[in-house]
Amino acid sequence: MYLVKTPRVIQKLFPSFHWNVESTEDSVIYFTFDDGPIPQLTPWVLEQLEAFNAKATFFCVGNNARRYPELMAQTIAAGHTVGNHTMHHLDGWKSDNVPYFHDVRHCAVQVKSELFRPPYGRLKPSQAQFLTRHYQVVMWDVLSGDFDPELTAEDCYQNVVRNARNGSIVVFHDSLKAEENVRNILPRLLSHYAALGYRFEALTPELLAASAKQKETSGLATRLRTAS
Ligand SMILES: [Zn+2]
Image (cartoon, rainbow, N blue to C red; front, side, top):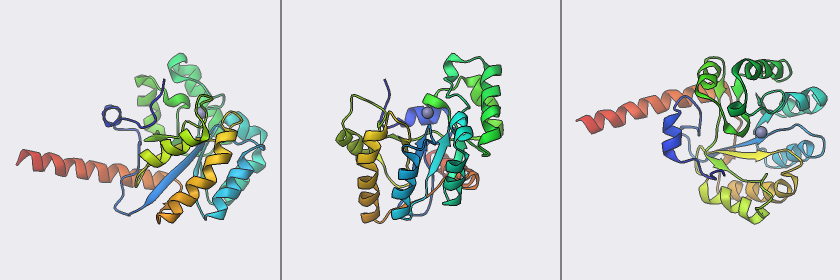
């Protein structure tokens, strides 16, 4: 079971994670691609993004990054950012801390980044506490569901257009499991948001730090208003 739109109550339970980007700027959306890079799909994703002058963020599995260094280099050269997604796509809930952190560090040799996304979005509180000291932990507020064999491409498309808004972080996968859906929906979603005047930007540690600061300030303002 998973939720297409991350409920606010869950976002509030883990305030040190990034669920979206708080911004004063209008109409920016953050597309992210997990589990690559793979030669079967990543180059095609890069081409689609380039056609719209879109930048995105790729949370790479270290093992794939090690196998396809030229795809990593191509992604970075095109102005996208990359993030750590563990070396072997480990599930934090099913992993002891020491081997989990070892796997994250192992990935860091291949994927040099201060951004981290836990596979399946799963971290134990003790893992979260440790990792947020070293990384900006990036979750999402919208899942396309592209990996789900039960969903049609149209379902995935609707998951995004119904839920994504300014500052949203949207999850796709450059994986074989998601390939069919991604090939269908990515060009359509790029057209859709470009026509609405959106820009597609990559996540950076600086942007996320600024977003966290802004959230703190606006949260404080809300509390002050409620108190007065
Ligand atoms: Zn993943």
